[in-house]
Image (cartoon, rainbow, N blue to C red; front, side, top):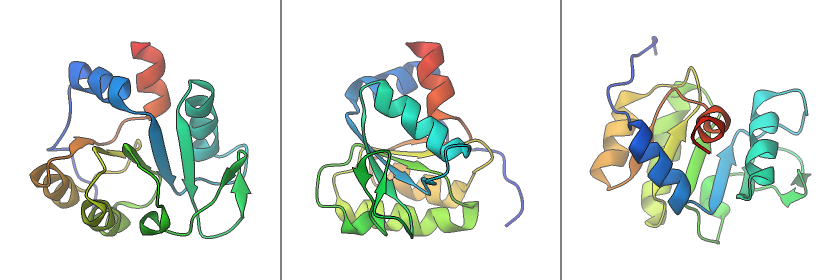
Length: 142
């Protein structure tokens, strides 16, 4: 997939509302390595009061939380899915999120855009934020 410009996006007021309504964030692609952006973002979000749920193919515990291999293994309520995976994987993650029927927001990190998946999430009633960092947006707004 070649680079895309985000055609589906939320504005600052919507992003602030998303954060205010979010308690639990599943972080897909959360690396156990402290020097990786996914780990730094997750640690920031955790310190900001959000419950994080790591989704990663290895490890049992990351940042003190149980690690799941895929989104659909998680049984507790998830408000947001924060994605640190390549754009071509986002569709699969969105499909899993839609099937779970209770996720409110799909968020893809800087450099990650998949407009087809974003449109599918929007049609399913989800908020969508693409190509922005949860840490930077939260820090700027709060």
